[in-house]
Structures are given as structure tokens and as C-alpha cells.
Image (tube, rainbow, N blue to C red; front, side, top):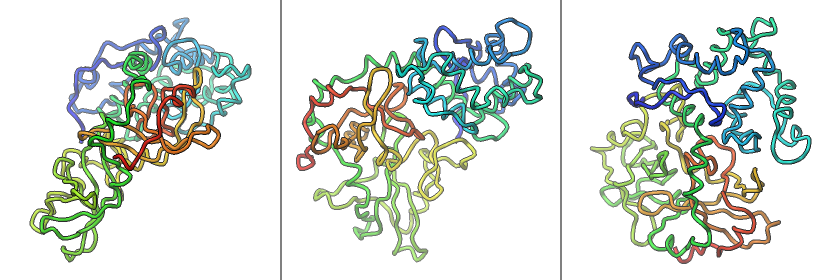
Length: 402
């Protein structure tokens, strides 16, 4: 479901404060015909300031040197003059979907864990990035080529237009450097982190998945297959496979979180489903679940269901976790579980790799959208904003106390 256009500044800078060229228009202004989609022509009109920012000598063309400088600014999200491994990984996901980039370690020639402009330029040259933008092969990227290439980066679903969700996603990434810095103030010190708070009313998502589902009659009608979360970490619904009493075979339903009751013995959940109301619990019948298909650039759901700007617990459970290591992140362990409290994600549970010498699993504060670390749908890793010494401060998570 596309959200109504909101008055958010259309940031096409994709970069640091120093390198940002923000177009003084919000999505509504860019969407001149009010179609809730920004066409190529509308996008070109809105991107003039960015084009001028990259075109340093104002000759209405971006040469390879200007191009590499522009991309460096765009990828240096926090504007510190270097590209960390985290920034590089983000750039690969957003800018290099159809291109091949060398691993970070190969480009980091001086092994300082940060890419300089020269080091990044080597990678861009190896990956033929400039050639992909210079479609007529004349050695420069003219205005039309620039607009087309930038549009293709924002148009993630290749639909030929940019909708609100695509805009929100890229505009959010554009200002991620500032957001990441602001988020530092919200990091919970592990010295103040207490598992006891999780034990009081916390719920293991891993334990919930697979539990029996009991319908309005009290009969066992199926099993929990997944939990859906919103971008703010709020639990939206459970996805369950049910059947038996319907004479239609097994099917999936989505039951809003506030209509799910955990049984006192922790053996299953009660939901208000019966033969008369099951159509109200279809995968696409609730606000949390989109009526659109994956063409809206949204996260794939269970068995081809889709959830707009939301995600499934099983997307994060099973991912690798990393620890902060200077300006980048190092492999740490495996995300085993998520802990929900008061209807919202409170913690991720990670089992460290054996080389860390830590026994058991450890619960860490959950960090999602807007931090510049943590995790977002489609991410390859869950990045924990603590270093090796800090994670050694807390006690293992005791499931028997949950």
C-alpha cells in the first residue's frame, strides 16, 4: 500500500553534509502531476542541483574524475573523508546491484580499514562504473545520461517511476550519515543493560515460531510460521499456517498482534479465528500487509505474501552478527533469537563465535532503522555498536528465567 506523499525534503545528495546537494522540493513537489509516482522527466527536473554539484567545471557534462569524486561523496555517508566497510557494503547494495565491485579488503591498499578516494577510484575503474553511465561511449556523462543513471538507482523495482516507498528508502539513506551520528546518543551502554528487565514480560520469537495455534473454538488449527514487524520494531502480526476445519486444505493467515493471546502454559497461542471470519485474516486483508505485489519495492513475505516497509522475524534470525571494530565491523556470531516486550522488539540474542571465548547466548539492545548500524530488511549482517571489550561486560542470557 503506497502511503500518501508527505512533506519531506527530496534529498538527492545521498551523501555527507559537506557533499550534499539537496533539492529544495519534497516528494509532492517533485510529483508534479499528483500521480504519487515521480516519472523520469519529473525526477530529472528535481535533480538539477545534484547534477550541478557533480559537474564541478559547469560544462554540462560529468567526466570520469568528477564522477568518481561525486560517488565518493555519496558513499561517504558520515562525511568523515573516508569510506568504512559499513559504508562500502551499503553502497554496494544501493548503487551496485548490477555491477561487480572488488571486496573491501582488496581495495584497502594501506590496510587502514578506510577507503580513500584513490582506493575507491581503483575499484570503480575495475568495475567499469563510469562506462555504465556513459552509455554512448563518448568519454563523458551528459545531463541525459546522468539523469537516467541516477533514476535507475532510485527506481529499485525497475517500474519506470519512483513511488513514495522508493523515495523514502533512498532519501532516508541519503541522510543516513547525520542520522547515524544522532543515533549515537541513543546507544544503550552495556554497563546499564540488564537482562532482568527482559525476563519480566519478555517473549522469545524463536520459541513462538512453531507453536500451536488454537482457534476460537479452542481446537488446534495450525502453527505459527513467522512474526511480522514494522520498521519501528513494533510487532504487527503473526503469520500462521492453518487448516483442517475449513475443508480447503492448509492456508496462511495473518493475525494482528493485539488479537493474539499467549497461553499461560507457554504452549501455543489463541486467536479469534473461525469458519465465519477467516477471510478477515487473509495475508492481504490488513493494514500491515500490502495489497500490491513485489513491484512496489517491498519485502517479500511468507509464501509470496508481501509486507510493505516491514519484515519477517526469519529474515533476521539466522543472520551473522558483527561487532564494532574501529571504523568498521568484524564478524562476531549468529543471531539466534529476538526478544519482544510490550509488543515491540527489545533485544537480539546472539551466540558468539568460539574464538571470542564466550559461553552461551547474549542479549543486546535491538537497533533497527535510522541508526547507521544495526539492521534493515535486506541487510547482510546485524551490526552491534559495541566493541569486544564492551560485550564481555554482560552476563549470558538465561532462557530459564524468561
